[in-house]
Image 1: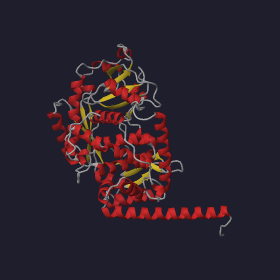
Image 2: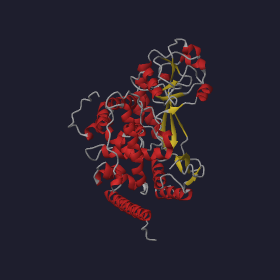
Image 3: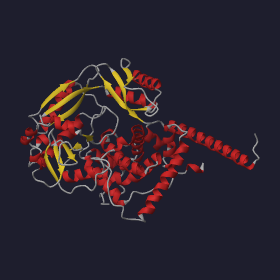
Length: 305
Length: 207
């Protein structure tokens, strides 16, 4: 079986390895365990510019405090709210210009990479929360876009918000299931301990089918929202079932695998469906979603084999 | 690369405990120790050095996210990291390149080493060769391919491969056994076909 010998191993060039390490360590401050309903790894969130524009109450951004913009960073390709943009969580000691240059050179902001990354960037209070960062050195950029300036104590606010985000993540780790009542008590305690006593806690979407709390933080309005999600045992079982056929058709066999897996895990009252039929071009599904209202596991998204 | 300040005698398990408490430098040391192995593993599953580099970053970001969920049962973190990589590779295949548009691709000048043109050509040769090899492996189920690559190419023990794949040791053994049997069978069939073809070309083929 000599034809099964792979090419010899290669080492990552030291400079490249160092750059990768730097970038990962920069990012891990911002990357916290997030309760994900879907399986795909998406480190950044593409921000549709149209949505940003629609959500923008431009004048409202002028009075935002540092606390209100400390959660997210959005880099834009040009000094326009309709330009391609990409958003990611804020991070302690994050240099906004460096972060946006990295997003630019990595191709995450626009692909193909539109030339060398700009050296100068301007940060403003974001139209829909967080901070918005635009290329160029024009000090009037924020005014021209009807956005407020970056609050002076932004860095300190990010540190405080990051601590809150960490503590909430620790309180509600992946794989756990806190019920609504316990979660409200725990979230309140974390907010108070971290100096966010003025924030409120709200709960939504809890039901017998979605009894476990997932938390999201809204610094603009000072609200920690607890959302009801399905039990981790159900999502794990559904994943196991789908993995048996690598998320690929034939559709009937795939659905049967998922159905058998969730039934074995004690969720026989849930149904399984696909949001489209597999095709020759897209024979597989990209992930799973759960509809607690109809107690349905839904295979969705197009994927190749 | 800057030194992370940890002695080589510091075990992965110790580093992992520090990382779980939020120590980024400990996590950086784990990255330095294992990035190369993960990089080559990803290449050997996908035959693309660029994607392998992207995935290597993604593996460590995912590892950081899941650090609180994991207690290393053995000294080395590598088997578990291989498991994370195997999952991301499956996701990547399922979702295509879209899933890898992470901000972790770095841009640095390749300024050292031999002529860059030679390096590019060598990498392309690697990728072509790797595609051929993976073509041979395509007769195996995904799970069998994982067991084969981890045990045969990456040199993991059955026990380590079991950690990586999250299955019992016996399952690794049976998958590897099946993989080897099917690969042997495929090779013999290819050789038979090749001999028959040669015989036909020689005019001595037996019909």
